[in-house]
Length: 260
Image (cartoon, rainbow, N blue to C red):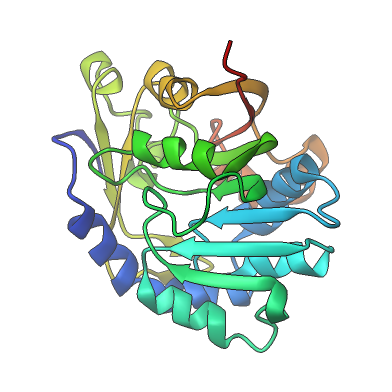
């Protein structure tokens, strides 16, 4: 369900992720989410490029799969941060958790336990806008990035994303006032025939507000992509005809602006 609403509290959002932790651990580790494995990870890894020798913050790391992938590709050190304690435990206990080059923190990305200018790249991989003041996270990302670093943000598309029931019906359900206000998407997830045990809550802002949070924190947007299945994928797999009827993702590359 998509609706205009008051901003959600941190606890309401965190509760949904806590209740769904085991579900997402299974989905990710069994590689059941085609959106992730065939679209978003491909685009994200392409934009990250070769991480050899790079220090990375994996903001909203979940059960740690992207941290492990970066370590496997040669990253010097990756800090995985997530507010869900259950997912951090799962990340630390994974048999390929990333050796000493991976460090997992149970913390808020808006209050990072990292020193200033301590990482080369910040990756925010489908990190939901579900906190009372989402702009705080970008201020923290700017703080921990070294001056020549990069911020890479993969998000659900602020212009087109809606709950599954709205996408399957008449289309985007929000009014123009909802779009320029705050939209709450409340839904259970359905992946590979498996339904999440609890509803999740995500909040969305207009494209103007979304980009504004990033630039106000001291970043310039240097690249914008909209990850999507290729024509070949859509022709060979009927899944996409039903499940990708509008742009669902937005991928941004940003650079810290130099103070004048």
